[in-house]
Image 1 (tube, rainbow, N blue to C red):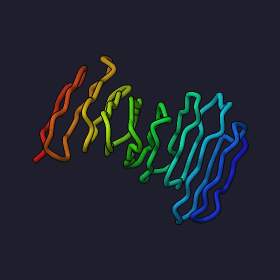
Image 2: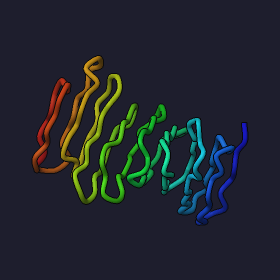
Image 3: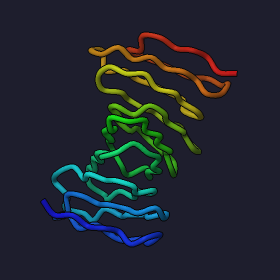
Image 4: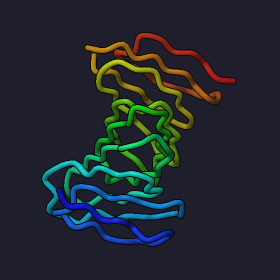
Length: 155
């Protein structure tokens, strides 16, 4: 396993041969290089910019992370994970993420497996049809859902 420790508050490009990116207490940003064929495990990384290929991120510990529209899927940690969607988003697949904040554009979030999630500024939530998904809206607005077991509205 190859890992990189990102210097405090720096921006770096992570080569496709790196499996793990570790941040510090600063505001680190990583950009994924093309050619990645496996997931990237991250810890204490604040911003993740994807490549032109399919990118999957695995959070090692609980925290907050912003991802751009090139990240296709993210797996949460055992703790409470907060993901902010950046750019104009298409669709992102999540598992084990407790909170999602959308940005501009149409945000679609698809969940794999069981779980509950709080969403803000997200327009669509899709379950996988096999798990129990509960959605709480953190703010008022319209939300389209499919294969979701329960929805609690926002105010």
